Each structure stands twice: as C-alpha cells, then as structure tokens.
Image: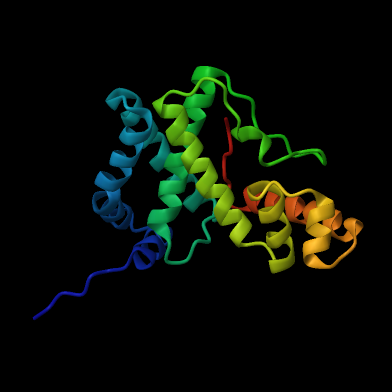
Length: 194
C-alpha cells in the first residue's frame, strides 16, 4: 500500500484551517534547501540562522494574514522571502540605498558598482537574473525596446529605425516598460540593490 505524498498547497490549506502540524511538515520538507540558500548568500551561519528564523516568521505572518496567494508555489515563495531578507541584511550592513519608486526611477541604475567583492558580484548576478525575468514578462514591443536600449546600447533613433516607428513611440514603449517593471517589482516583492 502506497502512502500519498501531500502537496505543499494541501499543507498550506491545512495550516490555514488550524492544523499546526501541517506547517511543521512544510518546514521539515524545505528547511535544508532554504537554509543552504541563505548560507550561500550571507556566508555566516549565525546570520543565516537569524535570517532563516525571520523567513519562517514572515511566512507564518503572511499566511495568517491571508496574504498568501502563490497557489502550489510555496517553496519558491519562501525562497523569495529568504532572498529578500538576505539582501536586506547586506543593505543594513552596507547602508545600501533603497530602490526608489518615483517617475524618474531607472531599474538599471542600481546595478553599477565600482568596488566589487565576491558577495557584490553574486548579488549583482541575482539582480541581473531578476531584471531579465521582469523583462521577459513585458509585452513584446516593450521587451524589444528595453533589450535594444540596455543590452544592445542602441539610441532611441536607432531603435525607432529598427522597429519602423517614430522616436516618440520608442520612447513611449520604454516609459511603459519601466512603469510595468516597477509594478512587477512591487507585486512580486523583489529587492533590487547595488
């Protein structure tokens, strides 16, 4: 007789209905992977222990407040919380500036860094990956303009010629792409830092 493996989503549902054991199972199931990610980021077991505990406290708070809506994606959701808390650790340690969300916000401005150590390079790689995922979620016309402008270093004149549109249209597409990326950053609770 085979026993059925209970999915993360079923365990989350059970926890939300008051079954505390369900969350313990989730914790046991994913603790090693989550802790390993945190240790790889912060390279300090004591700090990693603190962030690990904070990660699950935040997960519990979010679940109890009814704000969890990542159906079937519990592990990626908790890994994102751990990632953001690890980035917060570096921000506090280095007093990194927080991402602005005004009209002049440039999502690519937070990537430049003069003095790069291993942690900075690693964090920068994560940020580049996050930005790339955000770009992939944009409508095709906006994605095309962002790629040409920031990855091919093309001027808006060159972009408008290549896309067979006016310069104003290419500027508008870039503006809407940045607005949409800002919304995705807020929606997905993504932290972008230097």
